[in-house]
Amino acid sequence: MRQRDDLSLNFFLLRCLVALVEHSQVTRAADALNMSQPAMSRAMSQLRQLTGDPILVKAQVGLVPTAKAMQLRDFAQRILYEMDQLLGQAIAFDPAVARRNFRVVATDYLECVFLDPLVTRLSQQFPGISVTACHPVDPRHLNQVLESGEADFCVGMLPPTLEDLRHRLIFRDRIACLAARDHAALGHTLSPQEFAALDHIVIKPTVRVFGDDVDEALARLGLARNTRLTTPGYLSAPYLIESTSMVALMPESLASRFCERFSLARIDVPFDVPPYEVYLYWHERTHNHLDHIWFKEQVLSDL
Image (tube, rainbow, N blue to C red; front, side, top):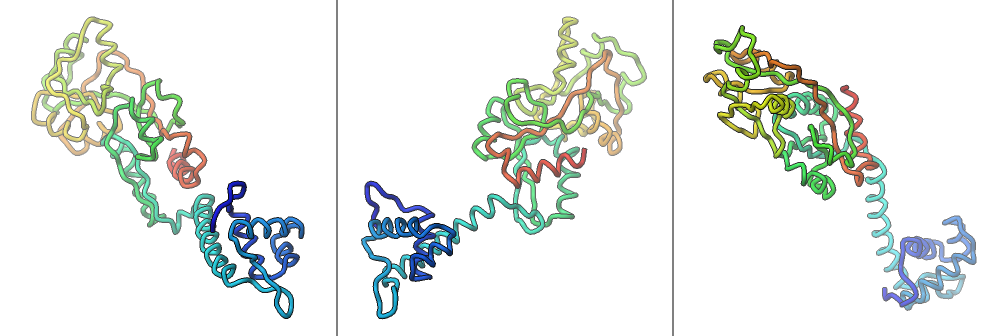
């Protein structure tokens, strides 16, 4: 099909082509597409200019499609079918039969307390749905990661600079401090100075430090944690705490799990630390996509 300067082949003309070939008559083709006969005549005129073919020619009885028109009809039907399939997938999402992997940026802490129960439930109800946990990224790059489609969602505690991302609160957690059950500080009321002087494991998944509120409270007193180890992950901490004199600030939801499985106990933080909020984040470009809407509904249904 060659394209004229003032005309272009579009899906409307492709549908008109199919109708003209199948009905071999302008009026019947127009009726099939619920349009007027003059409009179909104009469409056939445009098709003739674009293809250099008359489309329909006179026969002993009425009109018949040309051999080229028949060939073009087959081509048009394939294009229209593939487009219908594409649009159908874009406007409908059936999780019962769909095969879909959702990529979620999350720390190992959030894999344990958030993704684990979610994925367990989804796998039981929707066998074609899976989740990939992506390594935490620098918050300065998260907008780009979500915009590009490298990840579908992020779960976490992000700085106010990312408030332009779509987000929903999914749960609140508190900060706890874990130590070995035989740690010398257990059973004592520590002063801020004594607490800061303990050997601390600092968990830092990205450029933000978990426990910022504690560090800020100490800083107001002119103190800082005595850092012995900085690690990007939470899951190595209980092994290190259990066998050393080190302590670590930990989300309460994770601390409860660790205390059940390891010889660990909580040390009181010597000042009030407010709870923090964990959000689900996504980009505006996927806000109205049905599979993303469905996933968000699954997340929020557990709240």
